[in-house]
Length: 323
Image 1 (cartoon, rainbow, N blue to C red):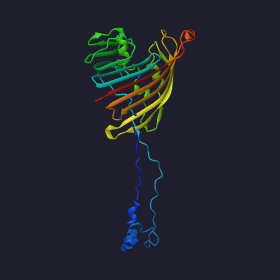
Image 2: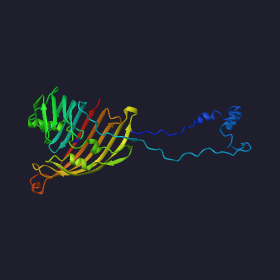
Image 3: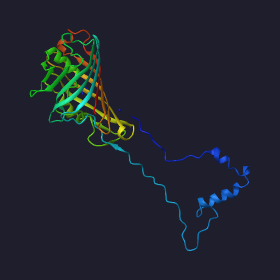
Image 4: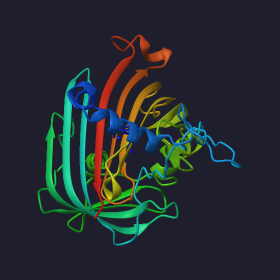
């Protein structure tokens, strides 16, 4: 990705209503002493005061209560879906960013279909039928926005470049660049599951480190690249029951990297990743990445840029609905 439930406890105890007990006080009912005596015999025939044990037998005691801690339930978490050719899905993306120049908002809603897969399991070719596309403030003045009903196809070519067509015709460079920002562009080498997901079933509250090697390998596209990333993710909760269970995962990550030669400098990201995914691996997969990126120009340019370092805040939300 450019780039959630509460657990409940049920105590194993029952409580006695003291009001009910008071109703059977012996002074309120003359027959209660006899009733209580009978109940006493049923409750503790061998261990109560005054109870006797038949000759030739050994008094017994109730078995001790177990002190072993209960075994925590574990869950197989899937951050991203298992894709297959022909798989259809619903897709909604929202991108909100804040820069020194103002705020940008992009909303994209479409029906998607997987046309081809990469060896990693990520889609290589995807088709989207546009349902809605709305842009506010985004700086893509030359982009020709596809209208509702348009069919967009995006794919990874052998050279790792992305090819974009709209209704069968190649998109112009400006429009292709814009759609690359909007469309769900899969990571070529590794899935989100490999990068953000646990390697084995985990219990609520368990944490695991991000797969830094997979993240760095997947985000190195030659122009802008990450040098490092660190942090961990945690299974916060599991909501619902049966087939409706939903796992919530979140984590704080720190990344550093270098911007492309055309805009030289370094950047540092503070990332908050949150994902909710169905336990049965079908339904709504949702990922949210909140990022604060600080760009620092090289010393040779610092004196030319007012204010020096600049900051961009962005929230990207992607919702994939699997039938």
